[in-house]
Image 1 (tube, each protein chain N blue to C red):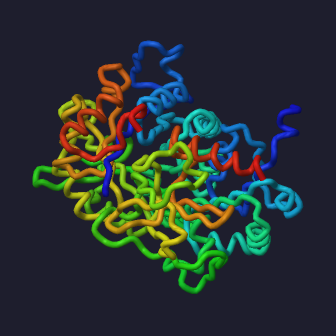
Image 2 (cartoon, rainbow over the protein chains, first blue to last red):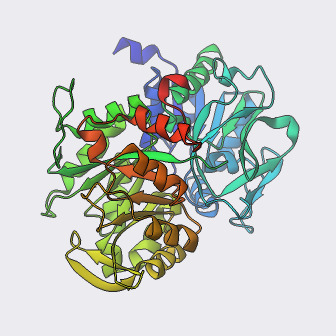
Length: 211
Length: 257
């Protein structure tokens, strides 16, 4: 157990939504001490924080606020602790979503989630290739351009090009990953993206250890 | 860019894979976790487990299965069979399943589909439809393993469940299932054209060409098969290679990622 005690803690924000287990497993498999938690003390102590999200943007935002984790998430991000948003957890970092126009997002990043265009199946529920827009993101270390990741979503973030690390093509260029300092977010699910997802989780864990 | 998913399907009874599985090199060919891990390693894009256990007092077994699969498999997986309520689905999703599939329960009570979509999001909700052809190029919805015609048109039903919030359709041709003559491509196209959500073609695969036909002529978003993978006739890798050779966009076999 000593290994567990010394491993830096990753807190996965638990605000009562669907499948958080796979997010937890996704980081446990790279050796992290992962807690699914809504405990503000534990979250404030964590060396890394993950905001997952599945389902409906409005429902997720409401649950996050009901669990009083919205302001806490913002202050964790401001403090520079490595922070990763996944799927709806990515979209919630932005100002809002067409999916729930009257619900505010956290507004940590500029932009909105917009409905994917007509023409291809919606949701995008498939593996797709990353088009890496800029080199040097520590979370993509060892992950090549055109690598395949698993996506499930009907809305995608439109934001400032400077923030966009990777896109995927699905009728439009979908924002697949953003980065701002030690804040990262992915539209894809690293915890469901096989071995490349493991590499991604390891890279995040390295950032957590390093900080 | 649309990519086509290759999905092995495992029928599970009391926590064990049935329908005959004959794999070289597995300690226990009936263990669903071991099989799923093997398919993952070969490059499967997702895995589907259908719990065909007749008795409903067996829920804990399938929840335990979800928990074990989530420990070993890092691609999405769906569990179907026996989900009749939001609570049933919640237990499976909390255990680690990514999606739940409903079939006869949705026929008996269509409101279940909207309840599931409201609780977990459409992306978690697969509606499985078992279809049998009529004489006039239409198809009816069947339940109870193809024994009971419920008097619904398949295309109408597919539209209705997607309106209710289904995020995906798992479409099985009961005419084709087990025949190894290939998917019912007309059926697949009819449903693909009728709905906006992804459609998984199922039922009848006996060769790798059938997978290719399902993707190209059926325009399916995903191709599901059981026996060609279980009996060791073909690996998922071979399926991917056949699709790639035919010009279908797929995620390549794993060690070429």
